[in-house]
Image 1 (cartoon, rainbow, N blue to C red):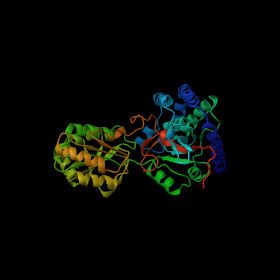
Image 2: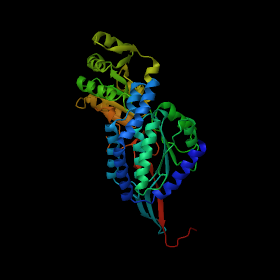
Image 3: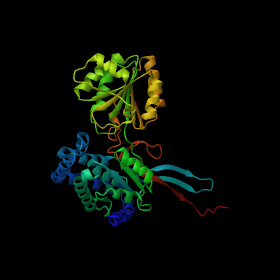
Image 4: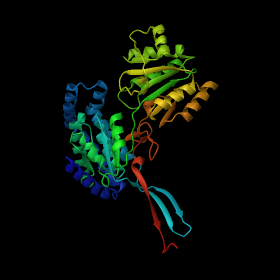
Length: 428
């Protein structure tokens, strides 16, 4: 296994050098060919995914993870659409970032360049195979993909289809490759390929990301887990609040931008929470409430609402399931402190009335003081997504502060170099 992965990485390294010299038109043509190939092979891809789904169900996989894993022809079509959208975006390479003439007459130009070989390690989301391959190719990087065992059949088939289409379009062999071993040690091999892999991007649960950050010998772009919060200020409109909480929590349970904790001002909790609880009950969401939230739930007597007493662990948990922690707070500063302590620097939201002076102040304090990649006022955390930000398909959502932060795609997979043109200058 180790030798096979090393050979894939060597081929990717060679391909990356050739890929960096291709034109924007050539790479865009390849992306369009890859999209067409996905559509042409949709039936085979869905059949391979069916094998993964059957095995996952036998293993007792949660519904949230099954939703991430499942492909139908519509989702395969969406993957193809994403590649076509990538082709329509501006070329991220060769952008002039700075031009200057130095004191000695040397002309300096700073230009964007690819990173080289990008290894992506991910779990039960086969659409990531297409997104990562497409983003890497558009940005002139070779993609070395290692999906999780749950999606092994899906990932292998998608990668095969994409690699063949890219190479038939004139892209270098090895520019898209997949590590098909389901042995967990395969990730450790990738993480140790200093000199072959230029950057590693883990996408998945907290355990995978922590392991990569702590053990990798190559640079890592940390894509974070999403312990996201919605905070309801005392000035919030109850129906806007309920709409945002319901969307942030229930749109899709298994995504990293789903809300996992609801904070609400004590001065308005009795006014705001009953409508929220009715929405949550209708969606089958279990509330993990502190003492005050549980008391309000009991008084509201919402039919079908499941309520558990929250523990310290609930404030730290990314459920990825129909569960929501609820805490009553004294005001904006307690809410901000809670978010900054328990959040994962992903996505956070406040709901408040900007026309009310108290609400306006709370909004500005929340936006400025919360430490997260995306901070919203009066909007759902569900919008933290590359497509929603106008970036096209994303390769991840970074919760670190260096290089890239938040949804990142093409620009996040580029670096830069300085080109210096002289006329015989030497330094004393």
